Image (tube, rainbow, N blue to C red; front, side, top):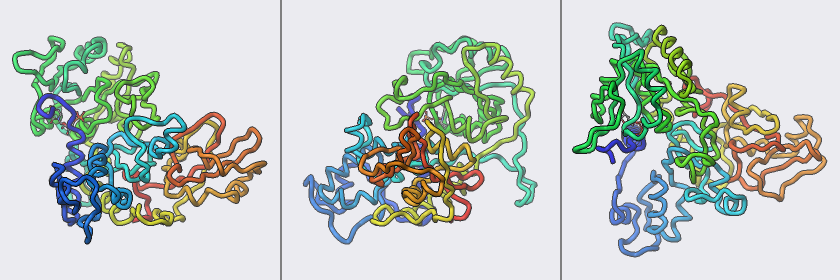
Length: 461
Ligand code: UDP
């Protein structure tokens, strides 16, 4: 689908992961066939379940959910032994409740994906969706720097723009039903698209749209450089293009979702191993970048859209790239993961160190993702084990009339005011930043993070 408007975001991520590993000096082998995979992992070809030969031919294996199934077939019993060395590139993430097979089956979290019972940080996501997983990310275009500036004063400068908007949507079905929204934009700006046109058919778009067809990436970026606004249509969710647009000096205009999209009401999220509720097309852009770079509107309200476009046209924005999406930010993050993440050791993780822990007791019904973010911190699941004890409840002034430690519940450790019940987590794979319910006040391990690099704490690299 690469040439036909299909998703490219995951390919961007694989390319940047591969480049990062190579630049960091690792020996890298790519395997794209089962036969080659057998030779790479040291198993004899044609025999489904043979043990891995020694010495081991790899330290880490980066794969995806489909690759996991192949590896299981190729490695047989050795799969269980070596699974701590796997890293799963999983754009939308896998929450702990879906990951632990036994729990998922008995508590209604069983989906097509998930149930591999890995450590949740082994899943590597495209954006920092839930801190239960490792945010791998990718590299966006970098905000342009003025060539004459000395290095320490490097500042992005505004780019000269034409009065044009570029619409984010490579296939024409993404444009359907968005007429009110598009009309409000085309009234104020010349509007361009990069929509794939199948041979012998023109894309079904409003007549006043200048369609370039699917562009090669360098041409697409040239177009963004000329544009003032990059317009989201609500789909695709959470791709790289809005970050590239913002890096090239565009404002990203996108629809708000009310009610939010989730596996309960969206075909796309259905069956994905996450309970996340998505309040706009690109929650990272909305929550981590925000105004003046990102404006989120009710797409069905023509007045609001027009007023927003007017306000955007009056605002001058400079190119901007969050540090975590720069080359340096990605290399720093991948290097930190490779250096510090050890999922093979039986003892609890010591990274980040306990000194980074900030314990927060959440209100009823809030997940630790929200509790920590509310305090301008981030939930750090590797620190959960430090607060999973009755003494921590005491220290917070909570007197427990009973302590539940024999029940599986991914919301534990938590406090339930009805009956003053304290719950302790008994399975480390169930420590979960995600997850909330109205009967539990969650005990949350929060930590600070570097400016523009949410995956890393200031004192831990
Ligand atoms: N892109 C491209 N040509 C186009 C439109 C987009 O090369 O006409 C690139 C864009 O620069 C980005 C990648 O496609 O790096 C993925 O973009 P998107 O955000 O659309 O994510 P997807 O939905 O494809 O995963």
